Image (cartoon, rainbow, N blue to C red; front, side, top):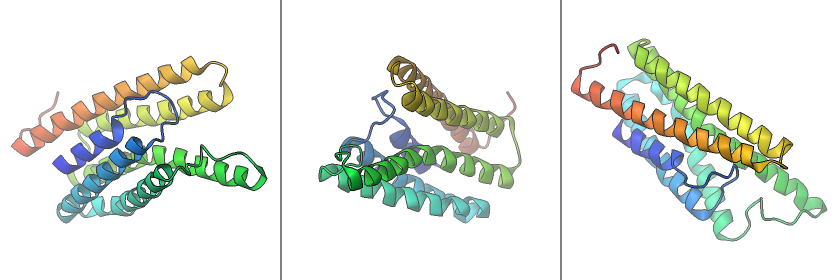
Length: 190
């Protein structure tokens, strides 16, 4: 669980509140974070069988992050390509992959929580984490909608990305709190 927590910390924590933050540092921290999540999920999967279903998603995100890290490092990011006729299609497909990759962390997190819930049963802690994860997903989707549909008012997207950062921090603190209690074997109702 410690590897998962550290991995999520690296994937979640980005200091830029722009919707599309795809620099080299972004994908490097994602790559390291997803590798840590992979090893954490693999170790947890030995104990809880339903957690193993998350591994293919994490492997996909490792390759996704590595691919975009290489593209960014070589100066061929999909968002920096000129919008000529055939390159526009590549750029839009790349943009779709970027956005899907940014959303996948929430899918992985929710699947991980579902797996833990299937193995240990539903607790107030997992319900709270699932609500936070759903809130992060909703905030991210709203930020994306405002980014693309209301680009004249970028402040709304930045505010939503700030709210998303706050939700991520709350999620990580709650995850850490639950992790410490479960390690000590003292999970109690709040």
